[in-house]
Length: 193
Ligand SMILES: [Mg+2]
Image (spheres, rainbow, N blue to C red):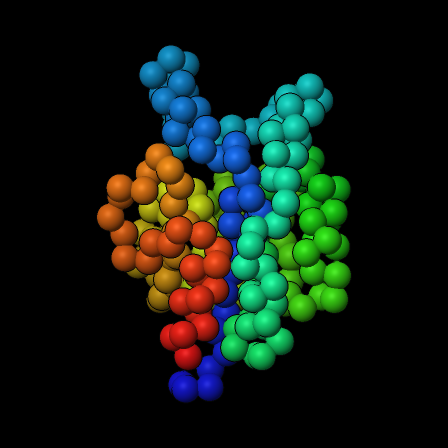
């Protein structure tokens, strides 16, 4: 057990990439629930070209890689972890996804980069991938998804720990594996060896 290489999955937006738009999420949640009376457990999916364009612009606010990426790559090089990128980005964001793959991981250090090409519900997609790769840990920034993944992993035999990177608005929520940013996660993964 001592030399086991941890398999760790990382969400892209808000985890590996800095995304100022994600602090707007609680506001969007409120709008959907109380003003539009939409079912909030259904994630928004862009239907036409205009909506897809706006969706792309929103994701373009993921402007730069988070501090901690280099330290994360060191953990991979030292064979302390195997890293997977698992993003629920839809098919329409394929090109932008591939851009970030090349920019963050030009030497293919990560074990794989996966996005949601079949446009499934984000948590269904992530659950499937976590199971597929038998991940020990998955790092996610969206609290709604963290809650759902936690329940699913408790029910199944795969005991994946869901690490949560919180933001300004939801930092008061109590949770066992709660982190401020990617750097804190990487530090935790390093010192637990
Ligand atoms: Mg995210």
